[in-house]
Amino acid sequence: FFLLKTVFSPYSTMRYKSTRGGVSDVDFNEIVFSTYAPDGGLFVPEFVPQLSRSDLVSMAKLSYAQLCTKVLSLYVNDDMKRNLSRLCNAAYSHFDVPSVVPVNKVGNLHVMELWHGPTLAFKDLGLNLLAQMMQYLLSKQQPQQACNIIVQTSGDTGPAAAHAIVNNCDAKLCKICVLYPYKQASRVQSRQLTTLMHRQPQNVRIYATDKTMDEQRLVVKQIFKDDAFVQRYKICAMNSINFVRILGQMCYYVWCYVRVQAHCNGVVDIAIPSGAFGNTLACCFAKKMGVPFRNIIPCTNKNDIIYRIFMKGDFSSEGLADYHETLSPAMDIQLPYNIERYLWMTFDGDCTYVSQVMQQFETRRSYQFSDAEQKRLKALVTHSYRVDNADIARTTVEFVNRFHYTPCPHSACGIYGAFNFIKNVRSDYDNLSIPMVTVMTAAPSKFPQIITEIMQGNIEAQKAYIYKNALLHHFVPTEHDKEDSILLQSEDENWKAQDWIEKIKQDIIDMNKTPSKI
Figure 1 (cartoon, rainbow, N blue to C red):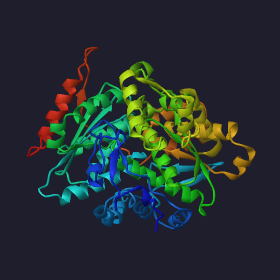
Figure 2: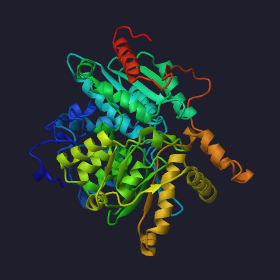
Figure 3: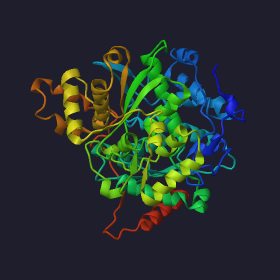
Figure 4: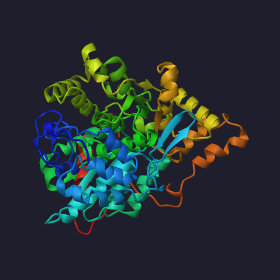
């Protein structure tokens, strides 16, 4: 059915390797439960399979789950392939619209809504799929051993991961620990986590921290480096360091293209809100497979490392000195770890080069790409925008008033990039003939306080119902739902990550005792 470039692979089914070259010939089942590769890199497929135009045309007739089954079959082993249809259908049974991912026309933009899952964010699409695969593999192993998932989040990944585990997995086989920054996350994001721990204490632990996502990542990475502990308790990740997350997200870009270009005879431009770069990376993989995205445009907030990489060749971060709290908190990230996979893809799988760049960044916190390197970086991502709080607010107000459509503050970053690219970069011919897609990453109802503050005084009273109605959603926890969490505080400047690490490890040990107690 698919035109595969099998000449690049000696394997009958896809195998995986590290971006840094120290590990290869890894089976897909291991990728499902993976964290970082042993050499510090991230797992990628041995080669990128290809889709022809006729493949894409045939996909336009499929349901979302059917399309996912076809795309994912290129990346999994034979056993998983035989079960893909069932797993994909089950993964998306929790979504609130039959199409799973609606693609609608709003003004001169096509908007792809990725927020119709259980936690109202795009992370639901990749994580429900990953949870289904985990449950399938764990249920067939003998003797059975529980896996223990550790997730750090800025606000959206954590709720999506925890709900995916609860909705798709046996509590005895899958346990999950989530660290989230309680000062940064919205009230809805926090309650999606804390109410779940109260409801499902036997396999869910929620840690409310006073650190940023980037600091939380350092804690989690240290746990992942403890090989003995990782092996003993089957520790794994559900952040986009896990490549299955990227696979699940890649599918909706293929879906989007065949919705917008039903005859598959033209190109599409797309603007994507960007934090840790996983969502944009998934689109880049789709383009590398042959899906005709012309311009891929990641749009950051004031935490702009992705913008600086692509527009200035500046891959640097001073950590907290560069960190900014913004109106789009799930994108307040200064360590976009998926850039490592992008380098592997655009520099022809040169693992030595990728390792050198990443090791210099990890050591010096800085790498400046040369002019020649910057040219290669633009092979897939062609442009980028940095969107500050004032522009997020203006874009939101304009979109609500002009089109009666309320975006979340992260989606507003993508809308800003789409409008500015159309106005300042594209030609008149392009504006008439080339579809522009912008990605809606979360429902506005996850951020009622931010959107209400933006809109107050900026819309006529008789039109206020437009955004107020958008802030209501039946998936959002009610004020009557009880909460529970574990508070992790740094106390003072002499905070020691090791204290948190030991606490989390001990909780994992306790959760795996019978019966489980808090």
